[in-house]
Length: 320
Ligand SMILES: [Cu+2]
Image (cartoon, rainbow, N blue to C red):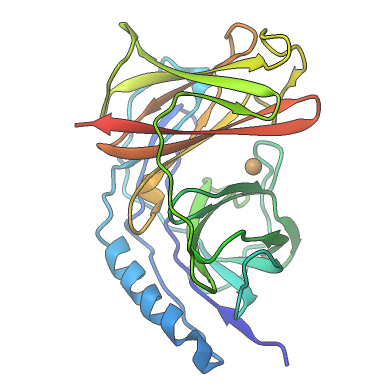
């Protein structure tokens, strides 16, 4: 028998203003959790869903932003009443084991539960799916395939037990970009320790990355909440100690940056997606970002060298 569980449908709808660059979006509306349990084994996720849902209602409506680097002159934020127009449902097997391939389906519906069928490509894809473990140690950037009837599918693999949060980013036709937050649980006990290190120079394969932060006044030793900063990933080839000569656009840009604030639960308010600035020297990829509040933030910068995507992850501390 095919046991399916709609594990959780949390829709945090982000209102993204099309014409401008620095966006403020809200996520405190349209939150719904759906539980359809077909077996007793799913009781404990259900309890968690309720808790998650409860806390999500408290999320701050102004805490989200989306920076489009190529229009850097417009840094105003737009506080709009959120207009939730979709919800996402995650469909997977009732039990997900670590290190085992699992089929995930994400069904996008309108608020009446009717499938949304038409989507627009943005950043070269119909859906961008960011998967993180709730301790922010694990990160995946996936592109589920559109099947039919509002349904996207992908096969993936979760490395260890514990809770995971999925940020599903898509644009229904003639509508605003939506980000839906989904949760899932991987069975077993997680024995690994979460490492938080603030080292700003790390090597990923054959690429050394230095992460530098600056403001309009120059290099920063301390980042304050609400302050606009430029984050520069300075890439070097580990063999030549020079800027890599084989950098290529990734999803149409010099690079992509996903930022999440460490929090429990992770919500759309913790999520920032920044786009690379255009005119930067070779090997340096810069993003503008504003951290909404103090705390520990995890950053994943993604770049492409000779066909291969490099993900450089860093932690940053943001003060009040
Ligand atoms: Cu993507």
